[in-house]
Image (cartoon, rainbow, N blue to C red; front, side):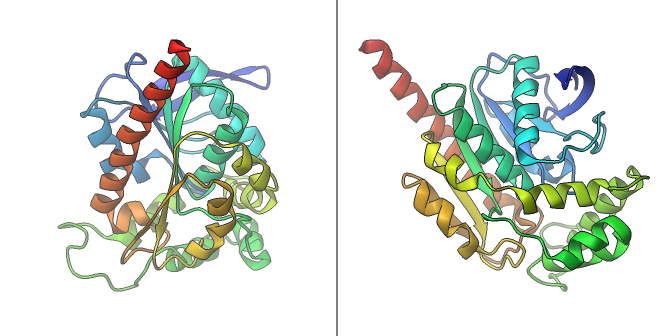
Length: 291
């Protein structure tokens, strides 16, 4: 689905995958936000299940990624502004934000800003960390030697370089799929700074995580890879301490690419959380109305 998103005084076509069903804004909306050098396709299993089990689904391609128009945005704050414009354009009134890596920072920033609003009913932060620092060598490669950067990220994102045959499913090649996706995004970036660099620099430069986390009041899930070396579970400790009501889950046998390495476990945790968050949100709304 293409949406006209008004941002920075310009209308852009924004692509949102809707899980194989027509988007219905009257339903609670699960908004899936991908990480750096990725697109909506990293959420394929999770989005299709949500769309066929009571949710409207918007799995976005961020600006400059995949099928979405516009330049890649420089900061997490700008990406949060853009996401708010997207939700307005889609007519979303109740949303669960589900973000991976860079997407988790966008979800966090958005929820922190919307603490006094009822639109965001919950956030799930998948493979997150704060601060989300990026090594200088990787930043340089992302701008000047993209294939080298792809190789580094692909190795570091997975819990093993030799998964069992047909894992997690027949015909599925975890590392190969990740590599080809990042290469496809790289081919869209024919000038500097590259999309790769812009994404990683946005993560590296984000400094509002502590303030945003202290403002979050909605239900929150931290879904972390037990073997993640890109965003180790311990690197989320500050956010977890600030969002005291949050639920924390570590997924076994998974690195940073949780959705590919353990797709069923990720789906199970996300769907259970989303249903509970909506119930909590409805209870709060009813209590306020009763007052």
